[in-house]
Image (tube, rainbow, N blue to C red; front, side, top):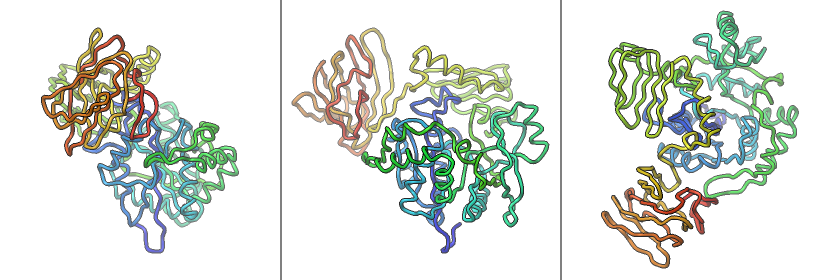
Amino acid sequence: MATSAQRLIHPVILSGGSGTRLWPVSRRAYPKQLLALTGPRTLLQDTALRVADPAAFAAPVVLCNEAHRFIIAEQLREVGITPAAIALEPTARNTAPAIAAAALMIAARDPEAILLVLPSDHVIRDAEGFRTTIETAATAAREGRLTTFGIVPQGPETGFGYIRRGAPHPALAGVHAIAEFVEKPDRERAGAFVASGEYAWNSGMFVFPVAKLLAELERLAPALVASCRKAVDEAATDLTFTRLAAEPFAACPSISIDHALMEHTDSASVVSASIGWSDVGSWTALWEIGARDERGNVTSGDVVLHDVSNSFIRAEKRLVSAIGVRDLVIIETDDAILVAPRDRAQDVKTIVGHLEQAGRGEAELHATVYRPWGHYEGVAEGERFQVKRISVKPGGKLSLQMHHHRAEHWIVVQGTARITNGEQETLLTENQSTYIPIGATHRLENPGKTDLTLIEVQSGAYLGEDDIVRFEDIYGRKGTNR
């Protein structure tokens, strides 16, 4: 895409969202961008691969929160992407501070850079059209325009903001000044917007010249830029991550880039984009872009239907069958089931709110919990006991730790385990086991070249994950997670 006379475009991938509208598959600890919802790769992986051409794009800068850092690093590694940086936001502050921090990091290396800002959780079906749209927006950016992608609307959608196009660019087809940003309308207004032909859906994707971006933010939101600059200047390196300084970043207002910049600058433009786009904002959106059968159903997993139409049904662990229903969303996971009319799929956020108010863990975690060393999942539990299946990647190592209230019995199912138990270190192979008494300092690691799988039986008066005293951790973690 780029010629020898053009500079590489710097992708900035925003991956801080929680994705609760796709509960129970997407949860705060493992949100939708980290899931394979539309194919074999996750949404994050697809986003990174769209801009993986080294002739056109620099290595991406990824913004995320601390809880997702190891999962994101592993998913990028799986598809051969080495990011320029994975920057950790110490607290959620919306898109303007995240973009400003990334811009400051990139400007330090290339003060004339062109930034391509991409949410990590979008689906784009037309890769060629996407690249053409980037080229057009980058040309506008080199003229000093701050450009957003306006999606050509496919109908009167009420779940998106809208952009009203202004005067056309004199030389670039499809590029217009921005006349107005409109918040999510009701259906009547949305229908009028689409009928007028003057409006586009607001996609949240941008192309910015970094110098103009920072200059306009300095003019319109100087305190925000000052806080972000301090957060970047005082950032610490944590393994392969860039940890933005917590106190100055927290001082930033929580504000979107639209509200902080695009609605107030005279340099804003919109480029029309017809690229097979979806923000995957609900189960209905996945039904709309999915491959439907002859009765309009989109299914995945072990699903058996009779006289069912226009429904979205996803089975993750068990057989799901349905008879004589229509226009439904049915989602099955190993610890939760969702059933809703398809036109009320957005209301799932209300269920998540109820779960959070009740202190239910299903709002935050899956039954399978991911850690930098691998993952674990619950198998059974009862009074004073809990059984888990633990999988440790080659080279993975749990923290050196102890428990005040529980003992553990480990049985190796597959692979080789190196176990520290007090002063003793042993190697266990398949069908061998060991016992970790209450109060013993211990560690589990996988010294082999294949995954280690074991069964852990916990017993004791308290079995919560916060009963961990951590002494040492190769991943630099603090607190009470394994």
